[in-house]
Every structure is written in C-alpha cells, then in structure tokens.
Amino acid sequence: MSAPALEPVSVAEAKAYLRVDHDDDDAVIAALIAAARGHVEALTRRGLIAQTWRFVRDSWPPDGRMRLRSGPLRSLIAARVFDAGGTASSIDIASFVLDKANDTIAAPAWALPPPGRAIAGIELDVQLGYGMAAGDVPDALRHAIRMLTAHWYDNRGQVAIGQAVPVLPPSVNAIIGSFRVLSL
Image (tube, rainbow, N blue to C red):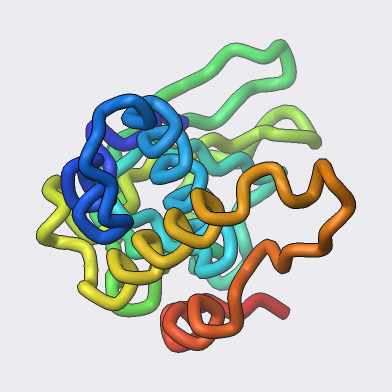
C-alpha cells in the first residue's frame, strides 16, 4: 500500500477549527489528522485521497467479478498471476472492465490464466480514493476528520489518568455512517 500524498485536512485548517493560535502543537495536530483519516478510512472502507492498494486472491471467482471491500475504485494499475514456482506473470489490464460504481473488477474467468499456486496466486494493484486533492473528498468526511482530530486533541491524556473517553464521538459516527461500505 502507498499512503496518500497529502491529508484531506491541512494542519492550518485543523488549527483554525481547534482555535489554536500557536505552532507548538503542529506535529501533534498533524499526527492526529493522519490518525483520524486512517480511522475514518478503516470505518468507512473508503480511501479518501488517492492511494495504491494490493489485493491478493487465491483464485479467480467463477463469475469473473471481483468486488473489492474498499473503494472508491479509481483504476487498475497492474495484475499478476503466479505459477507453481512463485514466478509472476503480468496480465494485460485491458482484459478487465472496471465497474467503478460498484467497486468491482470484472473479466471472464475462462479468459484469465489460472494461478499455479493455491495460496496468494493472484495480485491486483489498484488505486482507490475520491481524488488527488483534499477538495475531492466529500465535505462530510473532511468534517468528520476535523471533529475527530478535535476530540482527540481535547482529550489527550485523560485515559492515562483513568477517565473513560469514547474513541469515536457519536456525532462523527453519524456523519460517516452513510459512507460505510458494508461487508457480509
């Protein structure tokens, strides 16, 4: 996986939201933004800023449709199949059709070379995310990151002295709820 090139919320935006006028906590705020982005991405199963992920499969699905459990799908970068000796062979990505609305990669299973090893015989490198810039991320998710950053900033240290602080405030949970990708 490659991390996004930037965060959906800048340190300056977070400081304005937090009403912090000094630069002493910039590193802490930047770390909280990154942690909040990661938390929102994990809960929603959505990459916010474009990032590369590798999906590993044992075999091709019989119907040829590989539904990713993450999204939004932007592009298929590379596809490989491994032989029994562990040697990778590239597959032409033009063989696949991307159903971006459903975060699905499709190809007729009969047209794809079968993997030679039973475990992790297929690798797909994909790009996920809403876009390349912070403005491409839905405003609601950017606001959830600001709120979560503020929550963690305001409550740092309270767990250490024995006070219970919820990891995810209910308001943040409500905001990101409609963006969640459910999995069965």
